[in-house]
Image (cartoon, rainbow, N blue to C red; front, side):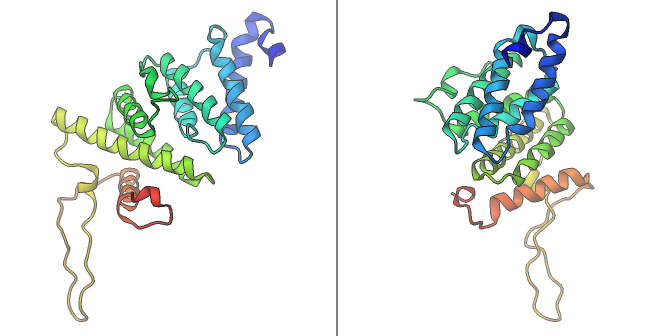
Length: 230
């Protein structure tokens, strides 16, 4: 790592960008020692920022990736994820309060609420928020319960924040869950089922319909992992 970081200056940015790209998928490796090494290597790149520049989009993608591991089962991975998160938020000018990641005042719920708020502000449009939410859904495939939990909570905060922002600007008068198809009650034999509730359901892009459907499952279905229904 040290030898790569001190390669000729004209190649340094390219080398560091390649290293960062190699690190990102390893954040989610099944072995803790691999996750730990990837997080610490990426942190080292961030700490030498004068040699390492990423676009806003890349910083957001990386921030979301490390955010998924702030409660990693491996404590060293979790701490390295928080350290990466702090520097990435600083690069994005998100100005997260230090206490959000401080050991004695850390709260996952509060952190995710702040991140979701900054993310919505940064992305700017509902379509961009929906696309990012679609990307976050990919973390539900993780073998780590802590990653799935963080992804679910972040999606919930993002949906709530996006709906609130749309309401304030007058672009929407409904919430994501209000735009779901009506739930149909079982009907007696020989009769037609009637909806339990009726919503004015507009034609919606498949991506948003999928997001809303998964949100509904997260909020209403009894699952084996109790943190989803607490």
